[in-house]
Structures are given as C-alpha cells and as structure tokens.
Image (tube, rainbow, N blue to C red; front, side, top):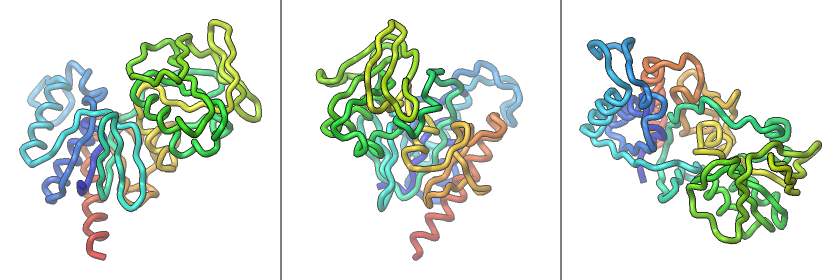
Length: 288
C-alpha cells in the first residue's frame, strides 16, 4: 500500500513527487514514458536550464532528483483506476493500492475521428468495461483498440457478454487476445445507430451488428481514466477545483490533462499544487 500513486512521469508528475516525498509520503510514480516532453528536442524558455536543453535530458534530471528522495518508478501502462476503500491502480501486469492518486498523464493530442463515437456516447458507446459490462450481459459487443488497454477491457467483458469483436482500426495488434475473441483489422468507418448502437461499419464495406462498443484506442489517457472513476470531464480534460482536487476525495489532477496553458512551467507548478493538496488531504484523513 502506497500513500500516494502519481500516474504520469512527465513534468507535472515528477514535480508532484518532489513534494510528496519531502512530506515523507510513500510515493509510486507510474508511467510508460515522459509523454510529449520526451519528444521535444530543444527547450529554451524554462527557468534554470542555462540555455538549450532537450526534453529527454530535463526529464532524466527530474527522475534522478525524485529517486534520490526515495521515489519508486514503475515503467508500466495504466489501464484502470478503481475506487473503493482505497484506490486500486491497474496496469497491464500489476495492481497497486494507495490512499490518494494524482493523475498527471498529459493529454492526447489527437484521437481517432470515427463517425458515431460522439453522438452515440452513452447510447451504446462506453469507455469503461468494468462499469458497464452488466448492461451488456448476454449481448454482442465490440472493442475499438489493439493493445493492452483493449485487452484489459475485453477480459472485463468475458464471461458476461455473448461475444466480443475487437476492431483494430487498421493498427497492428500488440496484445495477446484469447482465441474466442474475433479480430477485425480493417479501418472503422462508422459506429452505426440512431437511438442506440446497432453495429460497426468498416471501410471494406462489412457491417457487424452489435449492441455496444467500448472505446479503448491506444493507451488509457486522462479522459478514459476519469470516465472510469465517474469524474466530470470537458473536452477530454479533467475538471478540477482551484487546488487541483476533483469531486472524488483523494483524487487530484495536474498538467496538460486539466487543460490551460500547455507549458512545462505550468505543468510543474500545477504538479506542486496537486501535491500540496494531496498532502493536506492525507494528513486530515489520517487524523480522523
């Protein structure tokens, strides 16, 4: 059991960790990579760098700083967060528990533009298999995705639904799906339906009748994780209070995943704010 889990190993996440660690909180940072910052070649507008620095180098300096304070890093992909007595963060290979969570995943710069996803959301288009599997018991469903995130959703549906068809949307399969799950590799043209989902049409002209479609494209970003928890989101960004807390006690968010000015300096500052709020929350909750 960790005091706090930080999801995201970019500037917001590592900045938050520097504060939680100094408050003597047992801190786990989970992230596959450093997000958009890791791809940045030249940074010239960040305080204290002494000139030009790459995003990769800046992240490495932050990581070393956090590790020196006792941070534990897990280079894994988060596929789900559950909230009961404590928080359970599930990756493709492990489950971790914590008393509080800071979401600092950054945000997806682009998503698949598939007709019907937005208009049928809540009418058969879902983002959480664990949440909604019950409503599709004995029915036929599809999953949009091709990797570990899609596999996690499929395993949550198996044994509940009648059949599962995975639509890779033309992407390469990167997870080991069970043999009884159908795989369709043709790009998706449209999720069909009026009042509710009726099927998926692919660009090769085939139509697959379905009762529901679960979206698990790529990796689980901030919006998907927020939806699983029931957190309000706007334009795929997590809604937070001024102190970076959310409507769920113990869940905080910072950085690009909450919108605003998408800059390193902003992410670092918001990470610090989220951490200070989390520290206050944990001190208050343990004293009761």
